[in-house]
Image 1: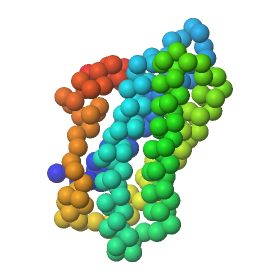
Image 2: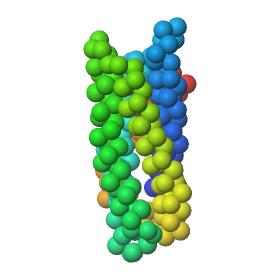
Image 3: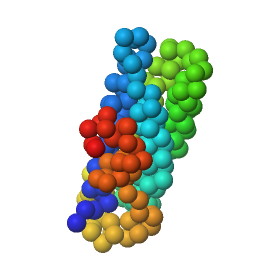
Amino acid sequence: MTTVLDQLVEDHHHLRTLLRYLREQISHYDDPSVETDLPCVMEALDYLHGYPQVYHHPLEDAAFDDLEERAIGDAAVIEKIRSQHHELEQETAAVRQLFEAIYNDQVVPVSRLKETFNRYLDMQFRHLQTEDEEIFPVMAEAFSASDWERIAAKVDPADDPLFRPGSIETYRELSASLGLG
């Protein structure tokens, strides 16, 4: 049986895969000999905006609620992570807006794009690392299988629209670029 923690860890693996893909795509953005796959970048940013906000972060927040109710873990770290969820959602929206402008043939200076995107990547990777190293081990020790079932029941279930087999239609081009389809 897959636990909520297993799902969260798997989500982090998938998010890192997608972030590395984006980093590779954007690293060549100012090289005219390499074409950035803008439709795939847009699909990736759409996924990064939707899935974490709709399912992943609410699931983590439900687990954080239980940790806080039991006074388990570092409350300051949990609060920092909760705050980062909102910041990441805002930063994802900002990065999406830049790429939407580019997609719509508006001029966006490469320096602005790369600075914004690199800040975003750094924020995402640090956030994932903090959760992996400082939160998930506490959850693994604190929660039983029944605790995880109770936590899962607090959040509407959602299938991963990119990484779950059979769900690739929504992100067809990105799925093919990542070798999932």
